[in-house]
Image (cartoon, rainbow, N blue to C red; front, side, top):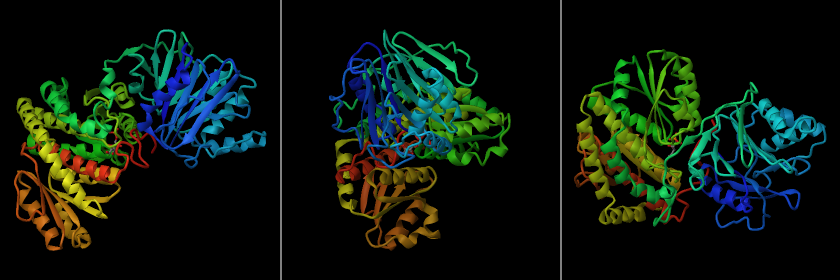
Length: 590
Ligand code: F6R
């Protein structure tokens, strides 16, 4: 979590440039923000930082300077306050540090530094880094001091440090992502390549334990453990500048919801060139796993149903944070398919490292090119959903499922059939996004807005759909929602259904219809307000949301209907739909 942006070059409004860069990274953390700029005329580093979102703030009061760094925070150590916001300074104010990650053993060093009379003003682990660098810098040159401090830190971290009079930015990473962007007479740093989009297409993704020293006209990279110079190769990224813009939409979530028909039909027409190769790898393996976190875990779970239904194949499924406890089964014949939008989710990265140690092959399904997961995989299938900015995943999730639909058909030798099914889903998604359907879903949001609890049921492929819909509702509208396998209702949760409790039932045209309907009836009999999301109406429904049948791919338009309901509940509650509380887009802490 946390967004990092840095600039060194000839532009004098570097504080503003970094501040604007941070706006593209705020999805990584928005508890607070801060910018430090080196002013050559005033011989000082100036810092502006504050708790809360960037919002309508500005850095107009910061002076000119050619070097600046900035940070958006997702708090770990220390509450959300102005003082705990990054950058953090040393005792002299000449050194400034920003940090992403957790400096696990910071307390030992803090105690020693206090004994040496260092003065701390925040509760953060990051401030300890500034003072460590200050201490080492008495004997070592600046970059070596930063390196020495970094090498003492345990945990997964990325740090950036600057010092008054040093015409350089020093950046080091281990675990937390950092990418260098190359310009003409200027260089950039960011925790996500998409933030560099307005400035350059030439990038280098720092590997673990690499240190980059950025100067105006040069970038040097070395390994902090061995001290050896790294001969790196720049990578060229292909993207359009407007891919990450809101355009005519009021927020990113709505924009990303509406992008789905286009993305899904692109996936259907191009697929991933690797689909057949991956299908062969799955067939060859002795034991394969789909692994994901949060919404991506629901895609993984959907994959198990798709593989079973379409390809008559068993594939295991695990949540990223739990996969570590399944690893004993893995060996060189195992295949692991991690699924991730960001490719930076630490629970996935950690478990993939362990899977690799057991000899397993890793074939990732990932959205962010060049991300840590992308780079550590033996084969990679790109989701190709474009940059996803809203914290709640929408288009990346349906993109993941679309790839799994194609993959399951490829396993059965019928990728063409898979593409046709996917195009049916595109048609159904378009209908779900029609004005009439939107009006219907918006009206429902108005009816259930004051509910304390919402229950969502489904069976088979609609079980992960129910989990995903409940997740979307709770994470952005803050209404408690619970997704359930419909068959489990009678084993406990029915006790909570009372008069008027909204109960959403997914009833696609498949083998689950009858049994699912029974679940809806059980809820209705207890006074539940039954919302049917189905290809046809039924008298048990108190409210009906039509979703056109698209075979096994109906899961996609069903999920879109759930996204829209969560969206309108949130908008009606006047909440920030793109940046829900306590969350961040790229979860890089355990
Ligand atoms: C929910 C959501 C999260 C992510 C999860 C995994 O809307 O966005 O649950 O799905 O944090 O993230 P990635 O896919 O980046 O690994």
